[in-house]
Image (cartoon, rainbow, N blue to C red; front, side, top):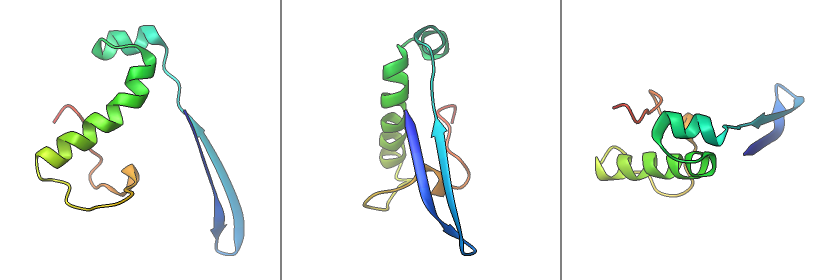
Length: 75
């Protein structure tokens, strides 16, 4: 998974790329699924859990970094 953000801050152009990678073995050792399922399914599972617990009432496109404190499936 790759995320790229570009923009200006204090009148300076910034660009940031973040790559996420997990091997199938590491994902399986963590939660018993392959790497693809881990990277694609985990964010959806967290979102569904927040909605079901009525902790998420906003609508539209929401960014994970906007949640305070950061959410964890260990909760």
